[in-house]
Image (tube, rainbow, N blue to C red; front, side, top):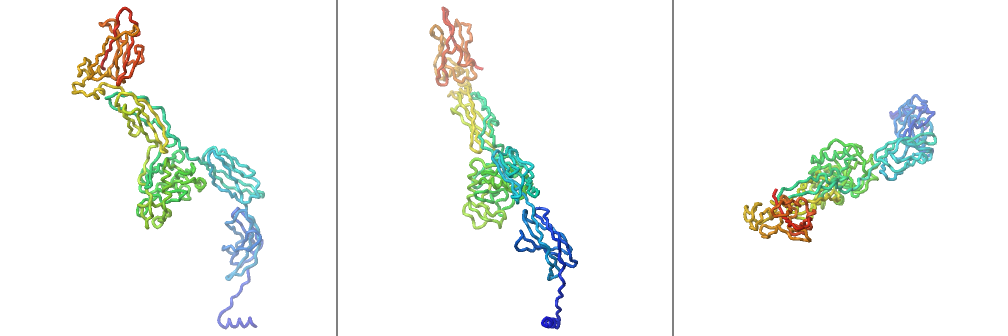
Amino acid sequence: MRLFSCFFLLFSAGTALPVLAAPPADPTNLTASAPGPTAVTLAWQDNSNNETGFEVSFRAGNSGTFNVINLVIASNTTTITLTPATPSTSYQFQVRAYLGSPREYSAYAGPASVTTPPVVSSTTFLAAYLQKSFSFNLTSTSPAQVTGYAITALPGGLTLNPTTGLISGVPTSAGKTTGQVAITHANGYMATAPLTLRVYLDPPALLPPVSGPALADRALVTGAGPAVISANTLFTDPDVSSAARLTTDMGPMDFVFYPDSAPATVTNFLGYLNRGDFLNTIFHRSVPGFIIQGGAFRADATASVVPTQPVVVNEPNISNRRGTISMARNSIVNSATNQFFINLANNAGNLDNQNEGFAVFARVAGNGMTVADAIAALPQRSYTAINGAMAATPVRGTPPASYDPAALVRINAAAAIPALALSVATLPAGVAGASLAGTDLTLTPLLPGTTRVTLTATDLDNQTATSSFEVTVSDSYAGWAARQAFGSAGDAVSGADPDQDGRLNFVEFALGSLPVQATFHDLLAGLAANHLTYTFPLRRFLSGNTVTLQSAESPAGPWVNRWSSVDGLIHPWIASTVAAGEADLVTARDPEAISLAKRFLRLKITQP
């Protein structure tokens, strides 16, 4: 009676009651299988011909509440594949049909149970280091089920323990090796995955310059022009083939490049450098204790972007240690263009392993890291309203209230520089002048004598090497005459005798005396132990004139040449030499003893 009266009232109001259709027939024979570690396939028998669709629910394990999967499954469907699933996980599923809206549901089919297969859970990329101990364990998502491990390729020096999955050893060669890992499980299932091992090099050692064979000793003459010698190949720097200097508002930093390990990256960087693209750019990012980054944006009102070259292939061969310089890029491995960063710390554990590794192409030389550290120590401000990449930009001084490019750290000059700087010194000084223009050494004769010229090569890390040679400056008549106080041009000619002592200027020059000195040297020498001796001055480092000692048994001759200044002072006829000012006091001794006949000695001085 109550149900009826309700029906009557509703009907009399003009509203029909909904007609409830019978639920669809129950699906049956639900099965679940796992075609892979992250997929589950369900299949069932559809026993209805009027369902609107199907609803699937699941739970992990075999207890707890089932959760409905928000998925539209059309009518007459009998199989679906669900992703993603979690590897090595047990699931239960149930399926029911429904009809209309609101839905009328059938009873559930199931539950159907399935366990997804395991996968290799260890990483697919690892960094190792040349000649350094390495160990790493392969792992599965079902470790208790593992029965064996294998891999198709490993770097030289590394081996895999097939029972424990431990890869260990000491890598013997640098480079990238990719092998296929296979982990076998108790149910016979084999999980596979690639494993790339990149063996990195430590940054090259800082080696001092090396000097080659020394320059040959040189002979110069007073009054002659300078000699120019190339020192281009005298020194080499074994760890530097090319370098550049970037001068910032905080000081200069010298970059030493690694063209052997990152040739494409170095060429890419030099392309920007040589075009002047880095001028007036900024360090736009600073992460103290990690990196500072620049190269992409200009110090202008809009932080405009530096035009980029094509992307460069990634060359991660050297480890990201403190002081190294790497290319910045996004998650795409080969995407680097103009942005570079300086490693403020040993970032190998992060950057060598991350996203196939970041390419080190240079290092900061000398004291340049003090500049990098000073930049990192500056306060940072966010200027993302100007440029979205400028969230942590270092600012010099007190940060201004608004964006001011003049307060940022700018690169004011950037150019290639030589690997070595040469300097030169002479000891004793005053004999020859020495100066450098690049690698050309100019030697200028000043005064007669011998000096040692020392060249020093200093590399960008303030390490040095030296090389030296001797320079002997001989005295010419022209050089001697230029140093004298002659009263007139006529007095300065070699055949003049301005002091009227009977000896011409060229004789005074050869004998190391002054043109105003009236000293006569007797050509007839005395006896010494029955051997005739003769002591005379001879200009040290004589050049041009020739002094010849002659002997005869009569003043009328014939005179026989016994010794010449071109023979040097070590000679049977030379008994001793004593330094005397610009000359040597030479004592000649006739080795032939005097008998009854007289013997005579004399000097003959000739001009060229």
